[in-house]
Image 1: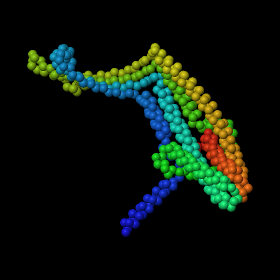
Image 2 (image 1 turned 180 degrees about the horizontal axis):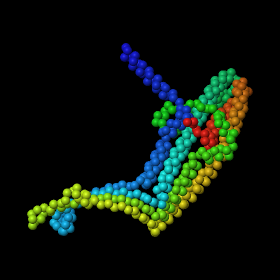
Image 3 (image 1 turned 90 degrees about the vertical axis):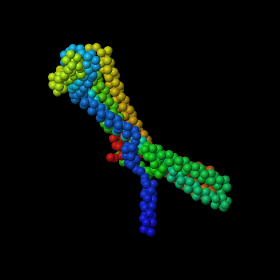
Image 4 (image 1 turned 90 degrees about the horizontal axis):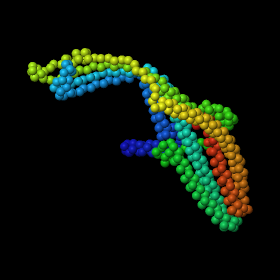
Length: 452
């Protein structure tokens, strides 16, 4: 009996956890954070930052002396020169050598220094690019999130409209029985209810598709029970519309990542010019080498009947040891215009980077002023839609009263109802359009989609 109770308890807990998992709803903040942590494009950009770090290690390595060792061993069989006497003899000679060499750049036209500076700038640019990717993902998630909210509210409106029409259908049936309205009106109401059912199905499908789109942005594998919280507040929390477009633009020039990327790329282009110009200058390398060798022969003297002995290995290592050190100066005179072409090519890229900065500034100014105008227009459209809805609500209520007493035919009543439904949909559309446009304007002002 105790075992059965234990099994029942486990099943109950698992069922409870399943219900809890199914009823979990995601906030906008949760969606954005999850997308940033799991988005594939962001992960790829993170790898670019790691590559930039590796490039910096390579640039630092240019300042470190190079150290290399070498070793070789060979056999010479047959008639060859005796390494001890210099005479040709029929013998097998073995020869071993080994050495260690050190090299260092003393001067290289400041190319190593500028390469390191460029590597540092590349790390900054990679981090900016990662930030830009995260911001783009956050905006896309916010847009998809608001689309889900719009479709949820639209589904509620369609269901309410269908429920109202079903009630109206019941009243019409009573009025037809009483002879207050013709039977044709009843058929019109039935057609309207059927049409409402189609609108509910379409709204349900739109909601499902919008949830699926958001779940895919989040890289969710299990999206069947995915849902979001009903965050429907419409207000300018940061009072962003109180700012002037110029103030927002000035702030955006300091905050926007795309402009930072363009300016950093300009600095990288300047360093590339400096590196290319270094190819005109002489280079000076220092070196130090130490090496030694041993040799011995397996030979037979037919006159004496004895083998020729070789000195001990340790003695040969000491006796044959040699050192070399010095400096090598290379002065470029003519190299097929390669250095000149590299400089000219880097200068062209520098001019492109300057133009890119100007383009980003112009694009940012245009986007800010457009976003400000859109947000203002979105607010006006939303307020107008609310006023229109209020008027349509009164007209619809009046039409219902007239239709209930037989003073309005079904066609006119359906017209009033259709206009009221359209007004409700317009309020929803302008509402979420305004919310998203405010988010974009705040985005340019440096206010993140979610607070860290």
